[in-house]
Length: 88
Image (tube, rainbow, N blue to C red; front, side, top):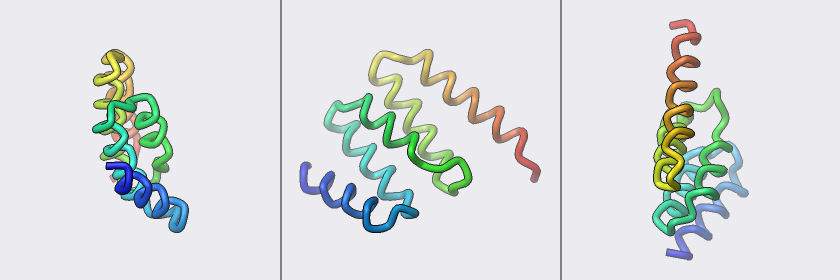
């Protein structure tokens, strides 16, 4: 729905630190078949955010949907490597 996309984008601009709005925006774009744009929006979620893992999984899924499964797998591999480097 176009209005949901508008409100999600607006929320991102009003509160740039509200990463859930970025994820919602990317999910809506995926539903609309705009996989490349969704991939870019997922990538906007900062690596130090609690939402980062969800964003990376979403990004990998959007890449797969765009017939770029190899790139999606690479995103997941990179995320796993990054997660093992983070101290517990």
